[in-house]
Amino acid sequence: MTERRQPFLMTSAEAVPLKEAARATKLSVPQIRRINRRHRITRQAEPTAKLEVSLPALVMCQHGDLETLEKLRAGERTDPMVLRYFDLCGLA
Image (cartoon, rainbow, N blue to C red):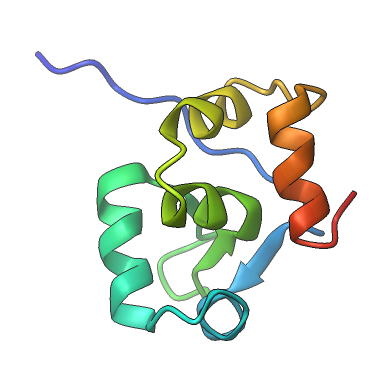
């Protein structure tokens, strides 16, 4: 049996619609969907609701910084590297 990853909890400030995330990161929506399949960095309130992505988590993936992504997933929001990405996204 495979180990299940923790859900990705995010604040409303960091959760953005896919199109907005695509504009902010210069990635396409299909690219973001592929990243999400691998790293599970989105949330969706119900099946018909819009998908929202954690912008700092997406930027971490874009930079290949999976160690910091796991710190964010674990809730370590005061870690200097996590804060660096929040600052980069204008969320600090």
